[in-house]
Image 1 (cartoon, rainbow, N blue to C red):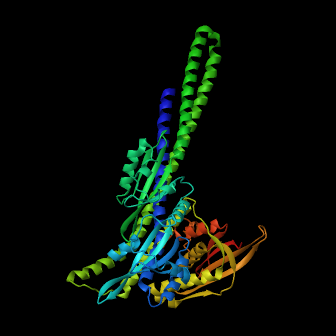
Image 2: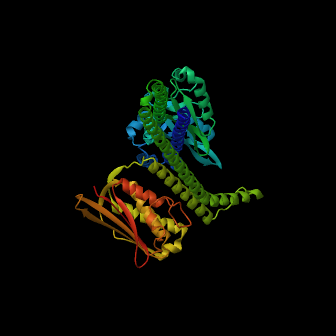
Image 3: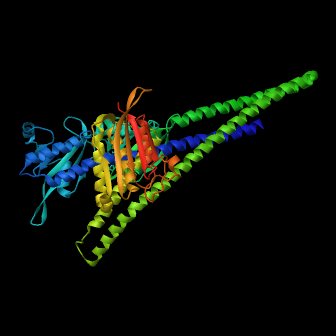
Length: 583
């Protein structure tokens, strides 16, 4: 029975080790997917700025164009080093946030042989570079858009607008976005196998099959590692394990990055199996303990046999003593088995919750995608009659924009949920005026209603008396909470009024000042069935939405050491409250 118990414990322990490894792989895949979306989120504004600048640059008003370039650079200065305007001869016309005398000193530099100039000139399309080492030996990533003018109905190349990004800054940002629970490193490689960013700065700009990179890869894993990298450059996502020297295991996950429908880069996250190694250490200790118990039991059995032959009179006391020891050992094994069953049950619950989240997110993504797809198919069919141009009415454009914005909000909510679940939600606190963000949220809600339901806008009165109240908090996150609560009131109030109030209340126990914001409406009120679980995930009785908004809002307020709650008003409607410390 001891031997059977030993084998059973060993089998169960191996299963636990595999579950731990699977959990690491799952977390790494989720983290890589989130990082790729974050990368797109920070690159998209730069691309949008470049596209707009390429269409509005004016050679007859260089100073006016430069002012716009300065404002664009200020909006993305956390990522971009600068924006450059280069004419059709490859000469610099203007540089953001640089005075005219310095720009004149650069005017004789010929940039017509640079890739970020040559490729847009030849293709008349945008260009995203790999790692390029500049004159100052600092590797940068360049994005450029061509400046085109129409002449006799034909497009004519008039130069490029270029944005430069320091790769080290981009890499440090991606590394900082990695959740603390994922102890790994971030890497970025273009589709041709050129390293854009990695933990070793000397490898930036090198080919992964080149001598510099290959000399750093241990010989015993060089073949599998190179095969893994080759597969990662095929434009699909994946996760694979590598066994390193000494038996240590590392999971490498990769995710392709598409911009404008084109595959440009591959994002990597390497996650050493530190947790699995620690579990393996505990498993080995358990196996050693079980082996020791078998040896002890065998020695005890031999001792009992010897005592039976030698000292028959002491047999009863010896048997009783050994029986107690065997009961203790059996109780220990039962306890271990219960702990293992509990661990398996928790993993099963986690898997069920993860599947539930994926199903709901997939359903919500399908809802706005279908109208967009329907409008696109309708427009495509109009071209089947040989038309080169078709008319698009305002309602179709509004439908596409409205559903695209809904997709954007849903993606943002899912990203926030991922950060909340992984406890990686970060706050960027600053001092700001509550009045500004409330007025901004009211304006956004009215603009949204004007395009989607102008009749409701006419029948709805949003009341707010502005007053200057300053608070030290994360401005963007508090704006998100106010917009969520205001949007929730608008959704359930077809006509009537919504009243917003802000006041300061002193907490005498904690000796602090709290800012309390309330949003009251005259709508349907909160269904009593969902009121007790209003701020939990997926709680909603609306035909639209995932029920994530209030859960995200509660998580944001809790991270500010605040409180959020809601009540039904006796005369109809509901009121949502939240409070946060003023300082």
